[in-house]
Amino acid sequence: QVQLVESGGGLVQAGGSLRLACAASGRTFSSGRMGWFRQAPGKDREFVAQIAWSSGSPSYRNPVKGRFTISRDNTKNTVYLQMNSPKLEDTAVYYCAAATTQGGTYDNWGQGTQVTVSS
Image (tube, rainbow, N blue to C red; front, side, top):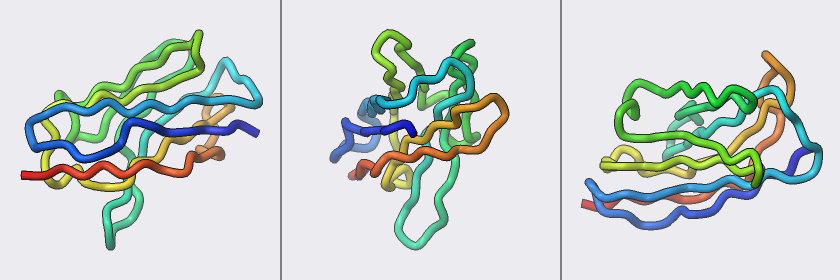
C-alpha cells in the first residue's frame, strides 16, 4: 500500500499561481504513474494530469493544458502540480493518486486538498 499526502492547497486569485505537492510513502514503486484528479461541488471526480513515474512523460486534461504543469522528484517520492493562471472553474478538491503497476488502475488515493480560485 502507498500512502499519499497532499499539501499546498488554499485560496488563490484568478491569474495567480499555486503549487500542489503529493508525497508518497510506504510501498515503493518504480513503474506506473501518479496523477492529479479534482472534484468540484456537485460534479464527478475528473482527471487533471498524470506523469509516468519512470520516464516523466506527462499528460493533461485539455482545459488545463498550457496552464498546469505536473512534475516529479524521484529522490523525494513527490509529485507536484504547478497551477498557473487558474480560473474560477478550477475550484475543487484536488486528489493525488498512484497506479503502482504499468498499465494498472489508480488504486491509491490521498485525502485531498481544497483549491479555491477567487475573482
